[in-house]
Length: 105
Image 1 (cartoon, rainbow, N blue to C red):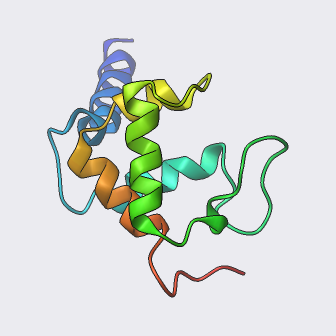
Image 2: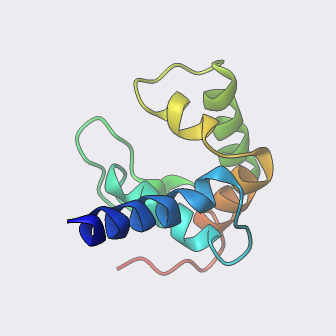
């Protein structure tokens, strides 16, 4: 039983490190991949949730993420999600999602 709890704890801690800003660098693609849990990374959105495929300008997407973080844009989930990242991470995520030549099927 203690081994199982230790494993769950380690998984939880390692999952939260990138969001907490304690581990930066190569984690940015993984942070951006978490967006696909609600947003389609390709051509279809999920109901009312827009697809990320429509974002081709990183500066516009970054501004939108900052507006969610500050509360200037209201959302049930996005405000809380964006508050988990610092501005540098949000900028990197926006640049990764909106990068030219991103492959979409």
